[in-house]
Length: 261
Image (cartoon, rainbow, N blue to C red; front, side, top):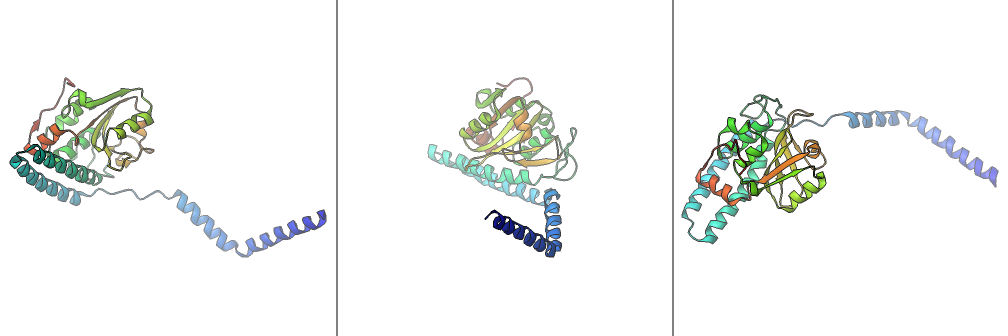
């Protein structure tokens, strides 16, 4: 019985070797193709300045229409409806505007104003997007502030969540639990957008001073800068009725430079 079993195993090995030899060219081609697929980098996204300008124009037109509806609103229900529509509009178009910047190179001193036209620092990425979305901000001055003051330009301190040394997953889970919207998040030495969709999850969109040194859109597992930071402050712009009101009426936002109140 043992001899029969050994003979059967030997026949299998011989057959496998024969098959492998006959199909060696196909196997080699498959192996090299697999290696190529494994090591080939994903195609990097390219900045899209034309789409960006189109989105700016579309959002400006929508803001004008919403502003007119807002000025005509008389009841609390009518006001609430316009605010809700404005939130939805910003939460739809702002991420699309951000995506037009993907692949734009980062530089600590980068100040370009159009996707792909030069390099851009993290603060300028945030302030430029907000300015082009119709927020009347001081683009340069705002971009140069510490992240908490950038957020504090729009939101009071009680509207921010400030954490130091908090576990990363706990921070993200709590941010998601607080609800969807377009957030600004400040880190140890960085500022970025956090987009939380209605369906949940997060998108960390920023001009990254780490690899690949450009504007990137990262999910929860990829957001290394957000994960490694000890200090995190976050505020939800689009779910603040005060911010929406300011956007609709063309309010000017003087840059907060000395107080988070």
